[in-house]
Length: 82
Length: 129
Image 1 (cartoon, rainbow over the protein chains, first blue to last red):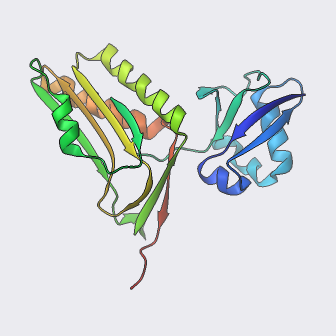
Image 2: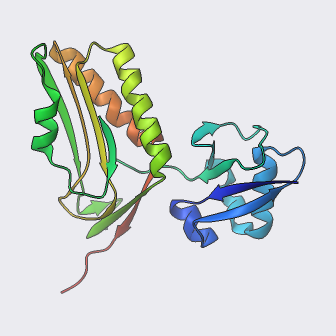
């Protein structure tokens, strides 16, 4: 297991009901594995999967990205600034 | 200069900071809260941001602009918090020797902000009475 800090924003934050959580990620420790860990706790998140972008340490990365313990990650819903 | 701020955006201050002796043209985009969105009436909008990532990305957008156009100064400022109809949510501005570069750089900035910068809005209906 690797534990990462997941931050939540916008509509995903409302769905999760928290600004951040610690996630225990299983092998292969990818963004997808982290999403699975989260969706297991918050099944409605699955409907969002197609529109979420993964950020790791404040940068957009593909979901295939392998995470390290202590990474700051976020599953970002479509942005609506401007 | 880039910033995510909770304070009202002072457009005059932005304009004072943009021009230099070499600047021949300044383009500024001012985004404001409007009273309708997708057919629903809006009284206010709450903007939230992943602030450190938003500011990192805004800095990258500025450097992309500097790589691409001969701008002297670029400003990208986005406000967060609860904003009422008519208030300014975002300002992008660019100063360059010639207008074409100023227009393109300014437009590029706001399009990139809207496409990628991690900021979200939540609309609230007008409060009756």
